[in-house]
Structure formats: structure tokens, C-alpha cells
Image 1 (spheres, helix red, strand yellow):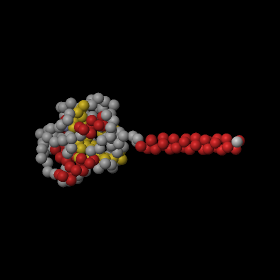
Image 2: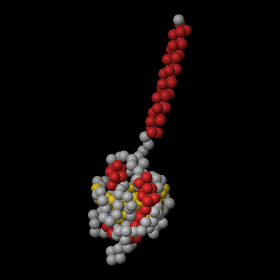
Image 3: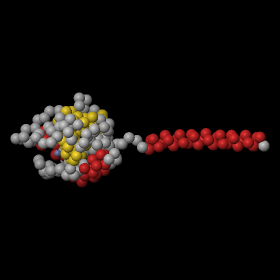
Image 4: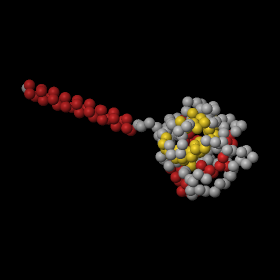
Length: 210
Ligand SMILES: [Zn+2]
């Protein structure tokens, strides 16, 4: 009898130990299954508003107080940085309309373009690796945003040679993605951007506000 009870106790002990191990494993797997979000809203710690559409081509002007922090929406590498405002309203050259601007090539293959900044952070230089939420600079009104309410012009496109500013400024409406990121949900523009590039070609001709 004694031996039988011992055996039951041993089996129960093994069962409890197994259950605890398994529970620990489940917890670890659960934390792997819910990583930090891959995409975040481009303006942090400030009220921001944006429209569904943009004049002439797809993009979003995200309005916020001057000086509000602008962040990388996802992980990637800095591609282009313009630290000087060369825009001349009489010439209105498309290549300079962004004023102070930053482009990021996301690990998802999408190019994210931010322009009209008042300040670009010191270490944000081409080749710099950034993660989602990394501060890039501050909201402003440089370039063709001179005289408007401060905002960041936010464009989604695909990588091109730098001269193709009419692609960089935006090829896909960002509003549905901004909606998701504002609500803390992951939504990737990568597939839509790939399909657009396949459809339009790498450098389609400029067809509006050229
Ligand atoms: Zn704009």
C-alpha cells in the first residue's frame, strides 16, 4: 500500500513539474507571438490631423504644432536627407519643394518621405539604421509649406534614383495606413506599393504639379 501511495505522489509530482514547465514554455511562446508593433504613427506626443486626399497626387499632409517630434514609422535605413531649404517660390522647382526632408527605405521595401521639417536630428544621415519610433526631426513649414500651417508632408513610394522627386513625394494614399497606426494596429503598405510599381514602372513620368 505504502509503495503504491509513494508511486502516486511521484507521478503527481512529475505531472506538476511537467505542467509548470509547459506553462513556462507557453508564456515564452506567447511573448514571441506578440512583438512590439512594426508600424507607428509618424508624429508622437502631439495632437495631429490629416485629410483623406492631397492636391494633385496621393500623399497626406499631417498637421501638428510646430516642433512636434517626427518619427520613423518602421524599421529601415535613411536614404536621402535635405538639411537646407533651397525652395524659391518664383521658380517652384519640384525637387526643392520639400524644404528640409528625410526619406527612409523601410525593411518592407517601401520608401517613406517626410518633408517641410523645421529641424532634422543630428545623426539622421544617409545610411543610418533606424527603428520604428526613432526621432527624425520636428514638424515645420519649410519649402513650399512656407506660409501654411505647420505640417509634415508624408509620402509612400518605392525606392528610385534620387532625381525622381515626383515619385518620392507620394504614389499611394497614406490615410488608411495612418488610421491603423494611430489606432496602434499594424498595417503594411508593402504589397500595395509593390503592385503599383509593377503596374506603373520604376520611374513613371510626372503627370501633375510637375
Ligand atoms: Zn503636401
